[in-house]
Image (cartoon, rainbow, N blue to C red; front, side, top):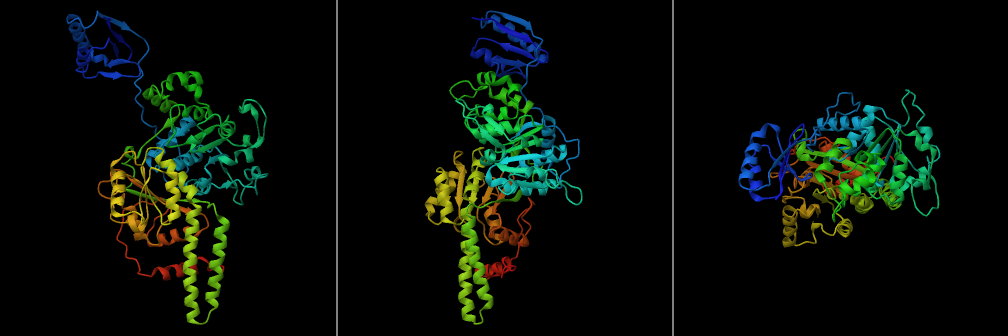
Amino acid sequence: MQPMTYTLTPNCYKVIFQYHPLLVKCIKRIPSARYRADGRFWEVATNDVNYLQLMAEWAVNNRLCAGVAWMKDDEPVESYEVPPMPELTVPHNMTLEPYEYQRQGIAYALEKKRCIMGDEPGLGKTAQAIGTMTASGAFPALVICPSSLKVNWQREFKKFGGVSAVILDDSNRNMWQNLLTMTTATGKPLCQVIITNYESLKKFFVKRVKNQQRFTLKSIEFDERIDLFRSVIIDESHKCKSSKTQQSKFVQGIAAGKEYVLELTGTPVVNNNTDLVQQLSIMGRLEDFGGYTKFMERYCAGDNKASHLKELNYYLNKFCYFRRQKKDVLKWLPDKTRSYLVTDIENRKEYEQAEADVIRYLKDFKQADEEKIQKAIRGAIMVKMGILKQISAKGKIKSAIDIIHNTIDGGEKLIVFCFLKQVVFELKEEFRDAVTVTGDDDDHAKQRAVDAFQGDPNCKLIILNYRSGGTGLTLTAASNVLFIEFPWTYSDCCQAEDRAHRNGQKNAVTCTYLLGKDTIDEYMYELIQTKKDIANGVTGTIDNVEEKKVSTQQMLMDAAMDMFKGKI
């Protein structure tokens, strides 16, 4: 039998005793007592000392311990309670006003300078990173992101910051540095942000990689132009979780010594705590945790390589990390937010050939005199417009897969809408655990899919087409909806959005429309805007909108004539 110890610290008593169920039952009756698994002791408030005295007498009298030792320690006990986010006290200089929680995220990043923005998808990590740049003026900035998000970053910098950004490609490979020093006629910088994807880092920023037995940062000879950047934004930073890949070493070398290094990810830990090591190294933050060896010993112990989780979460938030979920910021969020992502399509050449076909038929239609000929050409144009839509959809699959991973890998559920069977097939190939509601599923299969999505926490993804799943279903287990393809009318979009945005939904709903850059998608989305403003993250409830009843054929024909009016 061991003695029980009461250690008085500046902020509490630490109570330690050999386990006995009666002792546990007794200490639980003390109002302030709580067990600290990270230190294996009970924490009791200093003003509850009378309870401790009574417990000591009772334990000794009942021979539950070998005595009580009263001790003192000058070191306070860390509470591991995450402190509140700071308030923004300087101008953010954004062109759009951020939500209050986004202002707090900007304030945190300005204070820490090198940190992980870990908010749940849909809460605007991109806007907060841009706000940090505009508030600090830490330009020029480099954005490293997945290929599918380059266009979106360029658009968002203009939208939220009024800042011009350039995407690196072969045309500016040798002279992008000049763009950072040039100014417009009004004296504004021509470009303040350079954007590239992970796969292109070697091409644009590395002179050579030395042939060495062990690949380290010293193996890489970087282009001196990386020293021009004051800041680096690393989107989806969990892609750098392995220290063994060239890609993560390139990112680490580029980010070294920069004033601001912002990592954006909703899933900093994909497998276990070792995923954090390289991400912390890239920010120069690993030493805050005692260095590599101490981090591994303290936080990556055991078979799961995950230990002292509450303590780690506390220190991450203290030094370089914040995360909010939708439920944490509901008081600032509207019921529903709609936004769009623009991405390059993978099959541009195929799309341009199909577009040329449409234009050729439109020219023939304008030149045809006989109504019979016009009718035949009109039918062909309808088919060609449908093909344009399909090609764009196929070209967005890779981008869609990235977006889906970013959501469900972070533990969130997601509803995906599309039309094309090939899109459904390729998504199912990538996400084997996904359920579907499509024309190929019978009624029983559809209901099983809905029940699994609604009731099984491990079922993260449901894929639907509009005809089978656009109306009637309740899918309130998710608050994120992604449209890879979408219909022509606002009301049809609303019907699909309402699968999540309906009674029973406890979170704000985020609806994201994925548009192929310079494709029919952008025109379709603009057409939807004329029915109801659904762009720029504008939020609102669903209205009953009277839409002019026009046949699909006539709608497509009108759209074709309007889209290509400058080319026919």
